[in-house]
Image (cartoon, rainbow, N blue to C red):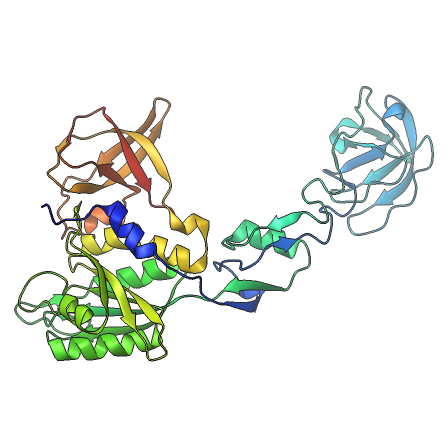
Length: 401
């Protein structure tokens, strides 16, 4: 096992010299999930005026505890007149606070008699008033570059009236599946054949990580065809991902092809699952390089490798901090295990209780058991040559986004 490389060395090789992809301007309505390319500065206060947090009556706090005439009615979206001294205004949620008023009493606390209303006493100034700029101040940084534009961020931008945003281009990915035994769904199985479970799984993960999968290619067990298809993929993609073909079998041609036409940066890692994983680069005609990640063919190894390597690589390409690292959480082991010389990434669920977090491991951690990944919340990271007993504190990588 002396030739196996630790994951830290693999990540260092993977992320060396990564340059962010280019940018484009897209309509805000089409920007969901994209990565912001430049910081956005607020041009408006949010809210843009003092407004009521509820349906009720606006008044001057000093007038609380008295019957007051209702001098105006303020609905949301209509301008308010200055408050007549010694009066109150009927106001609705979102309505503009009239000049001269400094608080709002909810309607349930007010007694109404015709055109006058009895205000309860002891109302503090500012009660139920949402002040101008409480959320956002004009000139402040609204969102930083590298922010993923999910629901709240999109709403934040829309609140400024923004219709176009500058985002990172989606890294283009070519996804290659190797092996004569791997066939697409819908084709009758012959003896010795398997359906391709890696392709739809990895395509979904890559898209979740911000990439655009531009091609999916089946690669036969042929060295010459492997070289040809890798060369073609590198010409059109920023990242080439393969599954299978990176081990030491006579029909495993990917590693040899990569070394022949490109550069192998790392091979064979001290991790479980996923030892036969290759990292490198493929040349293009213009002198640039496409990144290469060769994942093992076992589906669990591909799933784990995608989270550990594809996600941070795409995070670097997109210059997106939240994609570059997986969040870590400490948990109590709800299982017992012993590891050999490789670091083990066990599929676990997380249970949150008043006593803390417990990680429950799936019973079968074999690299071919994809069902262990379906409901997994995290990878429990078990150091090499370790014995873990139930109750030990362990580190888990949370599978978030």
